[in-house]
Each structure stands twice: as C-alpha cells, then as structure tokens.
Amino acid sequence: MQAVQPSQGKFTIEFPALSAIKPERWLVGIHIILAMIAVVVGGLLGPFQTFRRAPTLTWEIPIFSYYYQALSLHGVLNGLVFTTFFIVGFSYFVTQRSLQRKLASIPLAWVATGMMTVGLLMAGWALLAGEANVLYTFYAPMIAHPLFYLGLTLVVVGSWLAGLNIFLTYIQWKREHVGQAVPLAVYATICNFVMWITCTLGVAVEILFFLLPLSLGWVATTDPQVTRILFWFMGHPLVYFWLIPAYTSWYAMMPKQNGVKIFSDNLGRLAFLMIMLFSIPIGVHHLFADPGVSELAKVMHSLLTFVVAIPSFLTIFNLAATLEQAGKKRGSSGRLGWIAKQQWDNPVMAAQLTGMMIFLVGGITGIMNASFNLNIALHNTSWIPGHFHTTLGGGVFLTYMGILYWLMPILRGRKLFSKEIALAQVYTWFIGIALFGMSMARAGLEGAPRRTDLGAAGVYISPAWGLYLNLAAIGGFILLVSLILLIVNLVGTLWFSKSEPNEPAPIDVAAPSDSLLIFERWGLWLIAIVVLNVVMWGPVLIQGLNFSAGFWSTGFQMR
Ligand code: HAS
Ligand code: CU
Image 1: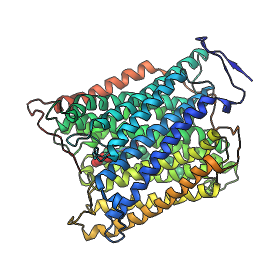
Image 2 (image 1 turned 60 degrees about the horizontal axis):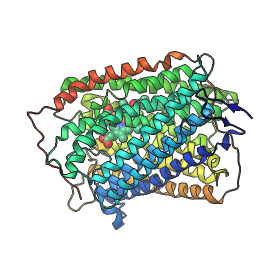
Image 3 (image 1 turned 135 degrees about the horizontal axis):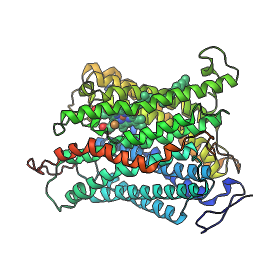
Image 4 (image 1 turned 45 degrees about the vertical axis):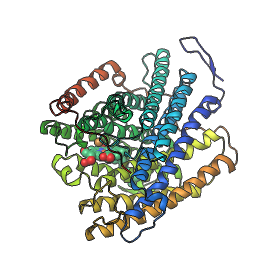
C-alpha cells in the first residue's frame, strides 16, 4: 500500500490495488456505457442504409427509410457521440492508471459528464424528432433546431473540462516528477486534448455566431462558405481525435499485451507531436471543390496533408518492428513468420491486428483524397464513405473494441462474457467493414454519389454501380450480425458473467529512461500551433469573410 501526497497538499489518496479507485469505475464506466448505447443505436442504422441503396438486395424497413434523418443519426451518434464519450472515458482511465493518481478534480469531472449527458439528450431529441437532419457535418445552409446546436455545445464544452482536468492532473504529476518524461499513453492523451480544444474553437464560433442565431431566427441569412471553413477547422483534427486513442492502444498497450516493449518510444512521441501540430492547418483538403477558397490555400493544405501522413508512416514502421519482436519471441522464423505468430485467437489482440490491417487500406485512400487534382474525381462520391469506413469504422472502431474487451471486465469486476463471441464479432466486423468500405469506394470510382438517397423513387442508378452497391449491402448485413454479437457480449459482461475483481490493466506507469523531454516543451509547441494556423487558415478565413459577397443564404431544413 502506498500513500501519494500531491504537492498541493489538498488530498491524500491510497492505492491498495489500483482497481479500487472508485471514481475510475463509475466515471469511466458511465462514459463507456453511454458510448456503447450510442454506437449500438447509431450502428444499427447503418446496415439498413446499405440495403436501401442496393438495387437488388433491398430490405426496406419503414422506420429506416427517412434517409437523411437516419443518416444524421448514424453520423452524429457514431462519429460524434460514441467517439467523444469513449475517448473521454478512456483518457480518464489512462491518465489515472498511468500516473497512479486520481484526476485533479473529481467534482469537475462529474460536472463535465453531466454537461455532456444533458447535451447528448438535447441533441438526441432534435435528431429523433426529425428537427436536425443536417448530417454530422452540420454546416449551413442546412439548419437544425436550436436544441441540436446547444446540445452539441454542451458536449464540446464538457469535453473541454475533461481535457482541463487531465492537464491539471498532468501538472500535479510533473511537480512531483521533475525531470521525468510522462508515460507515452498520457503524452498521447495530452496531445489529443491540446489539439481537440484548439480545433473545436472553430466549431464554437460557427455555432455561436452563425448557426444558432440563424436557427433562433435572430438573423435571416448566413454565409455557407464561412460556416464550412469554420467547420473544417475542426473537421480534420476530429478524425485524429478519434485516431489517437487507437494509436495509444497500439503504441502503449499492445506491446505490453505481447510481452515486449515498443520498438521506439521516442519515435512514438514524435508521431503524436506531429499529429498535434499538423492536423489542424490542413483542413482545406475538405474544401478542394469550394469556389470560395483560393487555389494557393488548396495547394498549401494539400502539401501539408502529406506531412500529417508522415506520423502514420512512422507508426507502421514502429508497430511492425514491435510485432516482429513479439513474433520472434514466440519462435517465428523467416521474414514474415512473425505475422502467423501473433495472437489471432485473442479478441483483444485480433481486434487491434485486424484494425491495423484495414487501417492500412483506409490510410492509403486518404492519401489519394489529399491529392488536389485526384480529389476532384473522388469528392462527393461514395469513395469518401469508403475511405472513412475503413479508417474510422475499421481501424479505429476495431481497436476501440479491442480496448473494450479488456476495459469493460476491469470496470465491471466481471470476466468477459464470451471470448468466442468476441472473436466472432471482431472477425465478422473486419470482413463486413472491408467488404462494405471497398465496395463503396469502388462504386465511387464509377461515379456513385454519397449523401444521396438512392432508394428514393425515380433516382437514377447507373448499371456500373449495381454490383458494388449490392456487395456493400452484403457487407452491411455482415456488420449487422457483428453488431448483434457485440450487444450479446456487452449485456452478458454487464450482468451475466462470473465476477473477477482486480484484473491488471495493460498500462505502463513509467516512461523508459531515454524518453526525451523536448516533447513536453508545451510553450514551444503551442506557439507553433498558433503560427501554423494563423498562416494556413488566416487568409482562408479572410477570403471567406468577403463581405462584398454578403451573408446571402437563408437556412434550409431537410426532411
Ligand atoms: Fe480522411 C475525408 C485525407 C486519415 C476520416 N476522412 C475523410 C472523412 C472522414 C475521414 C470521416 O485529403 C469524410 C469527411 C466528410 O464527411 O466529408 N484522411 C486523409 C489522409 C489521412 C486520413 C491523408 N481520415 C483519416 C483517418 C480518419 C479519417 C485516420 C478517421 C479515423 N480524408 C482525407 C481527405 C478527405 C478525407 C483529403 C476529404 C475528401 C473529400 O473530398 O471530401 C492520413 O492521415 C492517413 C494516414 C494513414 C496511413 C496508414 C497507416 C497504417 C497504420 C497501420 C499499421 C499497420 C501495420 C501492419 C503495422 C498512411 C499505422 C500490421 C500488419 C499485420 C499483418 C497485423
Ligand atoms: Cu481531413
């Protein structure tokens, strides 16, 4: 038993066995449960859209035929709610376990949770009532009920408070560990929240000054181009906000689960630092088709997008080297023998390994999107959902499931209900998302549009898309089966499995002695973030705010 005395001297915490930290269980547990409810509801809406878009393999269920409402629920619940709740819960867990202390302020954490939950209820109501059919990319001119925007604001502000709490906990730890590098998982978490708090400033301005006044009727018109610019200031870093926890699992947990060390801890820090620095000043790659953004800005953002892929290339190298070490330890031979020696029969590992494999596909399609002129052919086609279902729906989601399968038993104090069901869930998801993602991408190359209700009467479907849209529906069906397996295991682990307290978590509590401290020069990195964004976004925003064009657009509601 060890007593920890923070330098502020405000409280003393005892750590008999780390799993006895009560706020960890409840606080983290509530985030994970809400995240899972969101992804189950949001996820179930997905397959039915594939059936609606498929020319022959159609399976119509009336409730899912409100295409834009279902698509908005699917995108917001999976892309914004599931992710944010999961990430906040996971980040709290990682920080507390790795730094071996409670969060700096448990009351603040509960306030944040309360705000996020109330926000979720508000936005959820608007979505369910059909008052927010604006998709998860909620820029003007489409307009939703004010409660949708207020709800999202509460979720975001709640997540800021969560970030603040993590920063304060880190500062307390640093005061007691002068000259020591923070463990890699916490370093990644801090980079993630620095990036997240910075980028969501854009969406805060978009909501408070543009969307909310329009939705409340305080102003009659707005400027869609400016709201798109402000949205995408957040929109690209958002995808890295999702990715960093998955990378944290691959870098900081998977080696431990394999009984080896990460090949290079410092290279990992460099990857997280680069993601934090470079993921915001590149968002114009979502606006390549927009007339209101200059060609120069497009080229600059295109080039810098290639820079943000570098940390992922470093990651491929670092992880492959680590997995190779693990394979060799288990007696692999030959150049690729290590692949067969991975723990393919362990759901926690299988989820991460299949996640990495599909993420390779998603990452490469991302680099294709980033090419300024190639993008013109791909943008607004189903290629893009193909890209983000192999990144977010594949690599990230599978890795989160890998985390869930060890984290939930710890939080619940029970064994995982069924390892076999978990394995079946992982592999069906892998096959389903690969088939769905690649078919959507292929249909996109033939010109199949995204965000279009292909099931609506009289909509043209080219014969060239038919096969791929049908294959996407088969992928959707496999994903539906996988979701049902996930629900069974979730419910089983929560209420029906054997109790098993005090499972250890795969988290390091100290950094290797050669971890470099330069990565924690936060003042320097914050200045770099400000300079990069002023240079890369300043001219784009000024051009967007071209008042001579005026705020000319009224809001539209989609039904
Ligand atoms: Fe993206 C659009 C470019 C990564 C998500 N992206 C989207 C949208 C989403 C999204 C949701 O430049 C749609 C937004 C919308 O609704 O309009 N994206 C990129 C690039 C990358 C990238 C260059 N995206 C992601 C990630 C996402 C995500 C990650 C979610 C988590 N994306 C774009 C562009 C657009 C875009 C344009 C706009 C398109 C348009 O026109 O609208 C890169 O950062 C990707 C780098 C990744 C890699 C792969 C690394 C692989 C690793 C696995 C290791 C494997 C090992 C092998 C070790 C280079 C680390 C293991 C082997 C075994 C055998 C086990
Ligand atoms: Cu992007």
